[in-house]
Amino acid sequence: MTAQPVDARTVATLVADAVAAPSQHNAQPWKFRYLRDIGVLRLYADLARTLPRTDPQHRGLHLSCGAALLNLRVAAAAEALAPVVRLLPEPDYPDLLAEVHLCGSGPPDTALALLRPAVGRRHSSRYPFQDEEIPAALRESLCEAADAEGAQLLFPGGWHVQSVLELVRDAEEWEALDAGVRGETALWAHAEPSGDEGPTDGIPAEAFGPVRRGGGAPVRDFAAGRPMPDRPRASFEKTPNIALLGTADDRPVDWLRAGQALERVLLRATADGLVASVTSQPLEWPDLRWAARDPLSAMGHVQMVLRLGHGPEGQPSPRRSLGDVLDVV
Image (cartoon, rainbow, N blue to C red; front, side, top):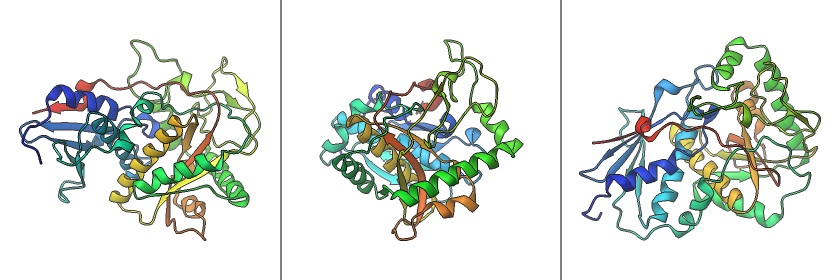
């Protein structure tokens, strides 16, 4: 380690990039604390922002915080820093998810640094994509991004894609019958557009995308049956490009790694001119999640379903202020 801690202003810049990460329902379930005397930035789970009906085991929370951690690493590398990361450093404090020693003495990760321009451009796109395959070279690049974070990205074959799409439809039907899940979604998905005085979290109406009219794209409808008369309708792609992100094991540390892999894949996709949306719907029901994996794959546990392709960029979602998420002591 070097002796000189990073100044608080630089840390604020890093955390501003970190919180641009995606999170389930845009709940933004993270907190950061910077111990300036020793140059350590801690990432905590914000347990006041959990989704008890949708994410009872906090798997999605860990994925979200892992994505924020990846963005932090990207920003640090772009600032010529070489952070040393420890996941779940204190078993007795499970809400302490990671310690980031910003004063690492190794060389910056240039591959991560190159992804920084994509951090601000990455937004979930819930619009129709072009009905065409992703070139093999781009698929390989995305798979390498997941592998670099200790996860696996799999582009399933035709039968498996149809199976996953059927699981998504099953999950949609189960949600429609569960008043608790519907209520939780309505709490975080705002049927009115965001504005200067609007919420700083959740999904704003302008990010919902159009109502799906045909096509098989697995795009979550955050309106949850609520009337939105001005919302347009659109036909989505018939043969969506689906990828599964997964890990060999299914512990909290694996969820954190999967979250970092997910964000690295999304940033790589953005840098390569692709757009993406993700869905965890079939993974939120244990009876459906086990069926999502390919039994011939080494992927033991699917952590996220991705939809990738060429199409319109998504709308940004609001973010909490740095004062709400960062504490410097």
